[in-house]
Amino acid sequence: MLKFFFLAPSDPYWVLLQAIAWVLPLQSVLTSLLGGLLILLFLISGRGRSLDNFIDRGWLALSGWLIITTFTAFDPTVAWTGLFNFLPFFILFAIAQFIVRTPQQFEHILGILVIGSIPLSGLGCLQVFINQPTWQLPRLFNGYDIKLGLSRDYRISSFFGDYGELGIYLVMILILAIAFLIPQTKSRLTKIQRILTWLGLGLGIVAIFYSGSRNAIALLGLGIIALAIYHRYWYVVGSIVGSLALVLWAAWGKFLGLGGEWLRVLFPSGIINRLESAINASQGDYLSTVNRVNAWQFATDLIKARPIQGWGLRSFELVAKSMGFDLHGLPHEHNFYLTLGVAGGLPLMLGFMAMVGWIIWRGLKVKLPKPTKNLVFAVIVAIALFFLSGLLDVVFYEPRVNILSWILLGIVCGISMAQDQKNINLEDS
Image 1 (cartoon, rainbow, N blue to C red):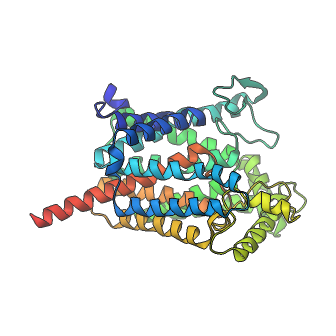
Image 2: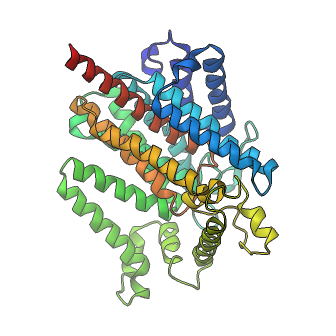
Image 3: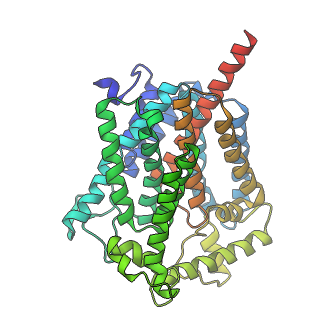
């Protein structure tokens, strides 16, 4: 029974990484504390000297550049606090890629992430079922207020404080759940694991739809299409494309002269209203689109003004205020890549993208047993969807979303490097 929860309990760092995966969706403060403990114990034990390969040196170089930009930042004091959104996660990535080196470890940590999401999605479904917004769960560790009901616009956030953060987290998890249940890989699950994976998938789909996140729902559709193309399930590709077309017809049809109002009863009203607000200027949420475009234009101007050193981390809102530019209440750029460019200039933006791109490319071309290769591809899809979400929002400020993305990136890098080294040793022998 212990093996179901913790694999190889003799390694304290591996146990801590698994513990982080178990509690990850539940509470950001507790998860951050466990992550900090893992980093601290790993470094003071002297194991940090093992984190010395060219990919770790690449993240070290970016860390150095970030530190340099804090000295030239618009407000160095604020920029120093922004380092906590990057430097600890670079170290967490390095530790994850050092620890997870075998297909068994890789699959086990993914299984924990999927099964561990059940309370998150379950609470979301409970919010939909009970729908008593005045009822509230006790706050733990200064966490978010959790109401047992839908918001005024019929949305849920479960344990998260923002609908979009919940949506992006579930997008990554659901892609992993689907990958486990594809015939080529589901045989590796025990009966109870298969049941729990189906449960996590079903609850997660309900929760992500009631999050009302247009970005997350669209990304989930893209992710399923990517998996279906990879496994040549062309009927799934057709079904998903058709379903997305029906949703858009229901939401936008009457504004484009195509009808479709009768389809609205088939989908949660929160989704339809959110999609409609993207093109209907009479909807209150339409302003969010206009305000984002406004923020993107200003961010682009800032990058042009300081293309090399940038303005420093977390400086966007401060610079806008000093210049008298109205962001209409937006606290950041609402675009991850513009955030990097504003913070550290083009060197940070391009360097970060190159690092992530190289890790993904190496994961795609590594030679692994077919079932593990299928899961590696699914993780890469999940990572790609996370970074695609960065085109419209900046969700890495939520520690749990950030930790999930860096763990996934780290374990892909770890198993790729370990397998490449194994293949080289076999060729040499």
